Length: 469
Image (cartoon, rainbow, N blue to C red; front, side, top):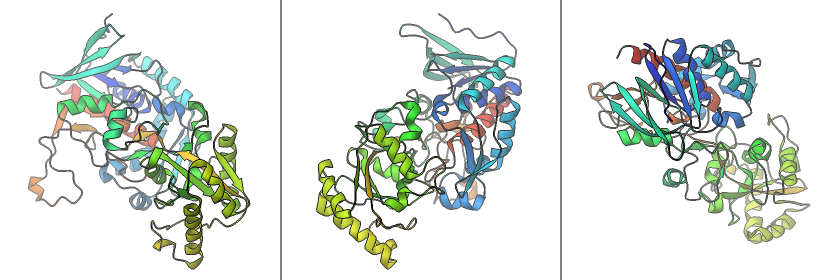
């Protein structure tokens, strides 16, 4: 079987990946006059967007973005400044977008239905003459004639083909599904961490570009995700949201040694805590909350803590409830935790909060200063989940993939004369979505918003550069 190219005089843009970023790139490139083919290794389009809650959000104020998220500020500014405008563009493609709404204290966005986004964008691609092929996996990327690329693809276990394109956009969704790369950069606990995403994003774009000598960003060990109910809880991909324990940044979190290991309240949500859980023994922690924390509702957009705990318990999760801290500590012996260490940790935490010295704890506690004081007390065993990686390919603001050679150091404290600062990009090679690294090296500014903005930008730029080859 051959994957034939459609005869056309228009520049050919090949997009590898059919998630949010890839579909937005496809429509954007088609609107700019390119002939577009999208290949997707899964049998279904949508990537991890299909499993999301559909809120396309980012920060509403630049000052909060700067304060809460560390990363490539030029890329962050692009997403921040284009987010609402690009949501309007998405709506013009036939996507049903809800009204602008706040997200927590720092963000704003609009809600979409993932399945409806996929169907609307596919219709738009087909109307504009583009092609989409599922169940086609990229194997290798090769530059040819100093302007274009050949892409070897698998059509089946025994059938391969080669596609030619003037420009290629890598939108394969990050490397969170690749145990080798996750172990190299993120955690050795690859046998225990949940893959809280689609199973197809295994770093295909990253590894293909690395073989060509692409530059990588800082923060290769950073990722976005949430802790979910640990085994023996049983659930499927459509229950990721229900099983997520988002109240972790209000809880007291213990590792399996019975000790705190991080400031639970760091970051804008529970994501920073989850990242540290991934590096603990068995990628596992115990969230301890009291009745006051369990009853909170205003702080939680999707579900208050007591609802999340109840859902986890219904799925078979390990949950304990006791009327005293001493009884709770003693009962945690059944999970392998040392009771006295647990009791000492909780008491020291409460004492520091009462004395106003929580910032002197080791590790400190700087926000969400709620003691574990009101019965009943609840313990929930959680396990880290990885949704997408934050490190990846280094790009400029036109989404061009940068070469490792020819590009200066990307260290943030680089001290160099202006004349020495230079960036060298591959001709006609672009990245979008989670294949773009460095948007969030610490913190989180919205995955779907980044996919939308980078995808649209990559599509327009790829079409333009292919046209002037």
